Length: 113
Image: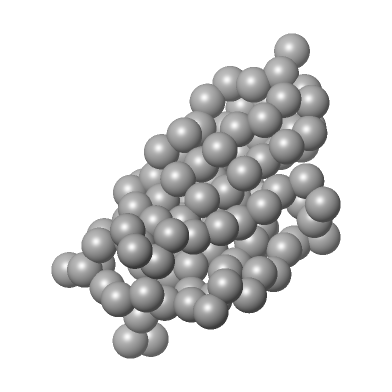
């Protein structure tokens, strides 16, 4: 059974940083990514990292966020710097395996002074 568990969200002031973590189980090393969602809006792709370590970023976070992974522990990370109020959202870790998308329970990130 594929399972994803996120951690690391919270409240941070504008300009601050947070690091999200995602632990994957029940699946071998595959591409993993993060997206975020605000109620009433479409989800926004943040970053994806392939099994080989290639990274892709959404335009709104490029240069501020960094995705990484540890293939030994099957964990993915999202380092978020210079956070802005517009980054406030629920952040989800996801992966696709055997044509099925899996996501974690989400972790709330709130950027506010």
